[in-house]
Length: 110
Image 1 (tube, one colour):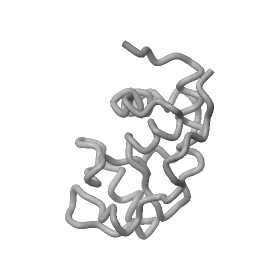
Image 2: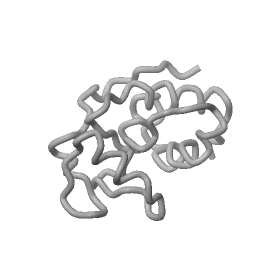
Image 3: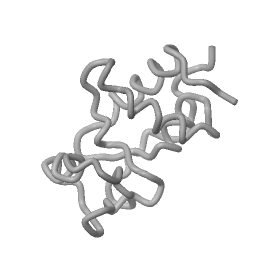
Image 4: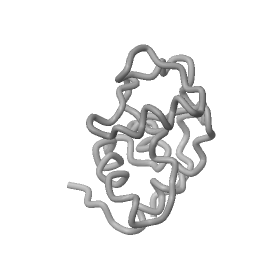
């Protein structure tokens, strides 16, 4: 079982900080970009604690089907302010706004 440590937290937030306004990324996409393709859930856990590490555009991270974080009432309005297209109230139109950074690993595993 992989545990969330400070280095992984740093790696995740480093990638999240690169997501430009007007785009979204998925938890799995971020996991692949940090070299941990099987740890999408861990990315979600990390983002749940990201407030302790300063300001990061975590609102730009959604599920693979574009679903917003349930219960996070500010996420939708924040994405709409960036002109992110929506399919419905709970899903962005991910095929129209997914960040195309690629699937290569951005951060080498240490």
